[in-house]
Length: 114
Image 1 (cartoon, rainbow, N blue to C red):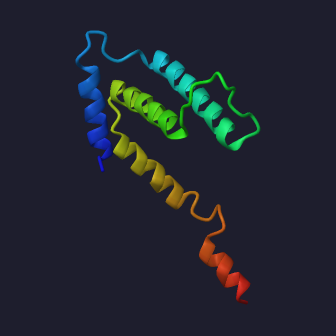
Image 2: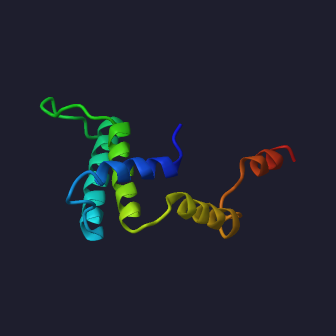
């Protein structure tokens, strides 16, 4: 399994072989939006009410998630953001500010035994 740092390095190695380099942050946001739309379409085909047309080529949710991750990494790299640090900051927020926001499974079980 690759670390996030390894993923960021792999994407950077791939992009750095081209003269054009990374797209601008605004263009990457547009690509991110496009990829998110493609993911939403796939999820809707598999789990929603809109089946694929017979003429549509098969794609998978995991393929679309991979595309989305690639663009997120491109955006982070272009802005010199360490995604491991960014993720750690988000998890700290969830574990502090939002720690009592949701019902924990062990609290639910304790309440049912009373």
